[in-house]
Image 1: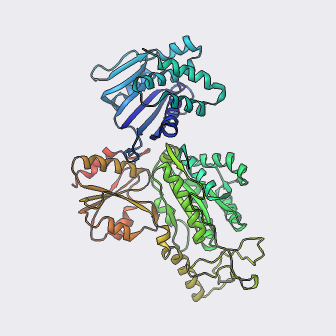
Image 2: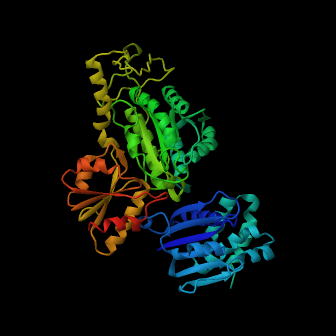
Image 3: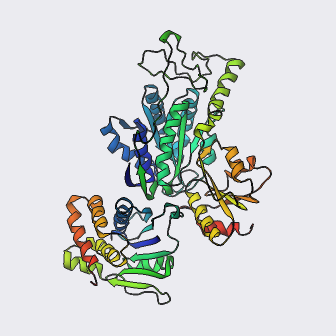
Length: 179
Length: 374
């Protein structure tokens, strides 16, 4: 198996954290190989934020370091969906945060899974900052790419003790979307 | 053995600690700074010292001093900082001082684009210091190789008493990958050889059969001279043809004659290849992706990837391209290392594919040029 994942949104939406948690979960707790490149701009809020991940069970399949055609994408904001939609396969699986994404391209055959990650985080968890973990939960719950337990171990490792439970709660909320 | 998820810069720092680093001096510069930061938080807990100096000149000179005091020592920088370090690099070569310099390339000339990548400095790194010498330079293509080749850089620097350069770039510096970390005894660590003769018989620059002199450090009871002028085996200045020839040739030959100990390269499907791509560092990842793609379409393409960039292993290069009709050299610059390849493969058609890309050339960009020739 080899997957290319593109995660994009505005600076401040926790895009890079999704990439980091996925990377740790895959490489340290799922015996998979990962390459992740991050790009972001100088502003703390706004601007493009993007994480490209290549995940494979075969080291030889990690070649070019960036996404060429993503199998799976998360778009947390309309602006980055417009900007990067050409990087997603025409039959790719795409997750969108309906809170900020209202229009989808009509000329592609994407399988679109949508939920209002930000509104859900605000309503159910009381903190919009963990919308990213809701999105990640939705992705893991529906693709079964990685065992959710591995993701929770990665959350513990990456976000630190103080915020770990909040992030895991949001992740579990995402796991159960549509269940 | 343990698994970690690290960036290229983190891996260099982690490897340095495993290799026995005890002294780091540096001046922060993007995109190398995380090496400094990582070591600043970790090395002091392992009994090492991390210092920020006023500039890169002071930093590398401090590293030379620390190495003579018996510590494994390193610094890290990028293009503008390396330009300042070259005078002292020549000093390290002349005084046969083991040290490691991590050079994380960014887009130049001058301050260029500090956060973006390029491979412009592969010639500068080799030739910028004055005098004649052979310099050992390794170029990793993954986070795992940032780790493995840094350990190797320390081992070679200790084994041959030379400065060794690890040449990374802004792209590799900041990508995250899974890394397998092995510590001694799972990985072998080399320490400089010490004098075996009585104190009154020791000469600091008298080589053994491998052309490398055993190294006594300050405070070990031996008479130590650190001499940048042309010197004899005792370390005394001698301005004669005889001594100059003997010294310069030994400095060159201790690297060339020990090439079997330092050589490192990788090949992918070169045995039946009509076309061989040659690439190094992060750009080699793009060349490799293109080769995998072309192979799936039945085009016989292979990859030759020097990990030891300098000195080039000419025999390996010739053997890896022996059946190729054409050789392509892909670089993220205006096409510079291709000159070294052409020098060796005189009877081959060697085609330069220079692609300036502030991140990394894409497989499509490479094929766009290559398709005209196949």
